[in-house]
Image (cartoon, rainbow, N blue to C red):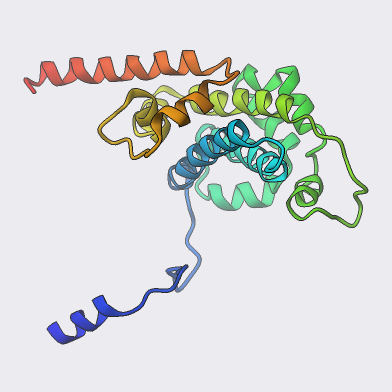
Length: 235
């Protein structure tokens, strides 16, 4: 037994490895939202940081990343509100890459998604296949002959979508997810923050960001409430 474990520890692991299940497994709203939340936070930070550092050379990477943030943020928001037993399949089959349809569903629960800049962003991202999204990813698409893109306006809309998605959900999930958010850890200088260039990332996040100050205030409120609970427990 020990020999087998030693051999296993020394085995070369591939660059990417997927752990397969024998059968498809349903992902309910909590499983799906929890899995989506970390990539959502990471993508948001990455998109803003890259825009801050090199908006011209990395244009296509940035705009694609921002659209991914919008899609993930709205699906996260919808999943929590709808509480579906098979949220992953629902997100794929009902919405696909149709951000306009997803936005309209989000707007049933929060007015942030009715804002003009959000509507302008999703108006051309209005088919399940994600035609414009595919064009931006690959540089060509069979039914698309170019386009026009305003990166600054896109960023402003995505800022609104991201913070709308994580702040306009029911209180329980809102507290749970934001208390464990990598973005919150970064902003608050938490012991759980793993950033290596915190000051640079903070500059990128705060640059022309109309929503970050209120989110930081919310994060401080969470920390204060946690501190009060710990005092009550004598910790």
